[in-house]
Length: 290
Image (tube, rainbow, N blue to C red):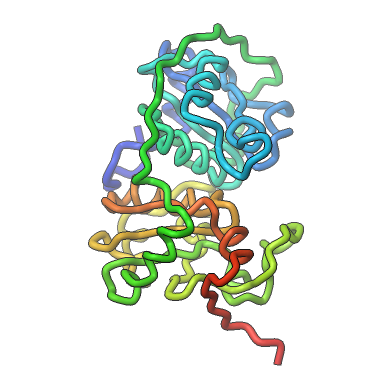
């Protein structure tokens, strides 16, 4: 089902597999893009759309919808317990990885990513449709959150001692300029209101996209092991990944936990927009105007 066979877990399907299983009962395709308008311009036949902000986020608080609301969302999408959910999206599955992490955190099983995402499917000239996907609502069973996959601010602060001791690792997956403190946002993206630039003390800079190939697929397990291991991020450590709001770090979380099989990897969804605004939270900065 995958193009690489040396990953720790069977969590990828390739575009050939998806094309061969478009009408297979129990296989459900879910498209999750940064650009939520892309789906309407053309999507894989049978795929349903998830709006990562409108569907996953609490409408007022800075938090996620509840586990019960996740069950209701899956029910509205016509997904049944036991269905094989295949997630894919734009930008090397950046936001599809966010959905994978969030649904895993929410207790959803049977998740896979389509390796290469939307861009690979389109580049290969495969079938797309603008027709709406008809679904029959289901009753998806109750879910239980897996808190071992999520890190909160105070846990990250306590984690700094583990980083100093060499038993923990912090992975900052943002761009080098964000890590240094030169900017507080991604290149060509709007400023998002964080007051301080820099990174969490002890974090290693490993931008998320270094884990992907030009066609959007993931690099091999050997390449990924060298990438993270070269920065001291090894399987024996308790690892926390972060970015701005946890979308890019979800991609790195997927690489570390699902592809490489690291046993203890958490995603800090508060990320820099929380840490950079937090009163009294320590920050390192390597960029100077001088």
